[in-house]
Length: 228
Image (spheres, rainbow, N blue to C red):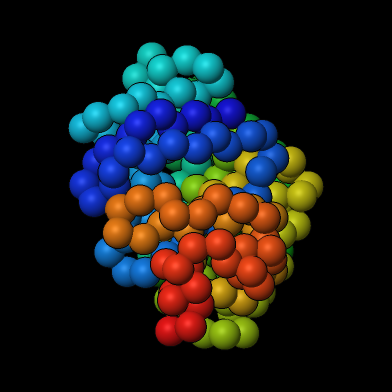
């Protein structure tokens, strides 16, 4: 699905890897390693200074930014919802492509385990966990093929974070989505990912199966990180 060839964008240096369809990948490493920078390259929130990125074997810049972000949805640590109702947020993306169907609204809430009564709720009246569920539903409204998740539970309490994790697991399985998730939580790494990308000092140090790379790290950098 995605291929990175010798990609550099500070602090990242000469990064190479491939993401296949329906991969469940966790991107982790110390603060400042370049995790969010790498994540944002997937939907062109930033572009590399050097190297090439391919999406479905075409250069990523061959796609319009709106069409790319429709297929490669991003969910941030903070929900960043638009002012207005839950339904206003759900319909925003599809309406850009003249694809909104009001019958989809209730289905989207079902996906994220919220009741239909939330459609008319103002988003500023929702709890943090409810807002993050709406953020997920808003991303799903665009019918993405891939989810980019930038620490989507780090601002939530433990119980709410676990609830969001369960929602994510169901969504990814039911919709056959490809996932790339940034997290500092090693429990999340084990629970949600099949494959890990460990970044340190701007370089991709390890790319392997979880939990193998956590139980038997092959680099000193990952070994030191796990001991901290």
